[in-house]
Image 1 (cartoon, one colour):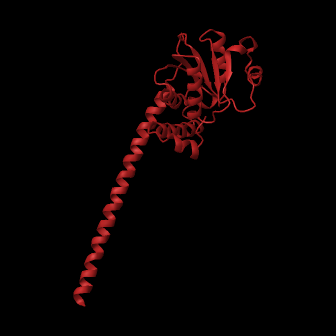
Image 2 (image 1 turned 180 degrees about the horizontal axis):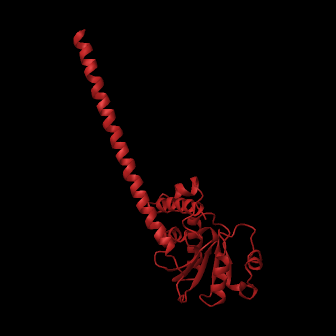
Image 3 (image 1 turned 180 degrees about the vertical axis):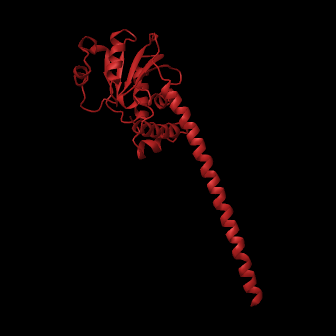
Length: 218
């Protein structure tokens, strides 16, 4: 009986040591993951802060606007009117949306260009935008495309578009929304952190999870 009790007391310190070692490993892993996230987020911030429109913008076969933020459609229409490309797709316009719903608000009369403008009604996510755009590009045999979206959304958008159209040259036309006017403010940082999380999911091909569990289109 005494031997059995001694054996039991001997096991308890061993279990405590094992539990302590496991907790230390978990803590170390958590710290490493946090550091990697901070480094990656810093890189992402630098990319977004450095986003600038290409000047002058080379002529392309088409322009795609990914809807969901201020001034994107206006920027795309301006490029079309300026002759940057002969065709424009407004992707993610939503069912029941018409060209007239955009042009009065954006201060551009695109009636004369209506024949050159297509509206995509199906896409509700960035991946959906990419698929919708790919079908349009194939239909018109395009090899180059100007992509118009918010600057913070551009890295993820280009990644999704490139995967759907690996042979098409993508030219970025980033639009800086009002929310990104001050990148050091809490609201902007929170939005950027959320977008970085979505970018990481897409980078590691977990975009389906993002589309179903978080807001995947900004």
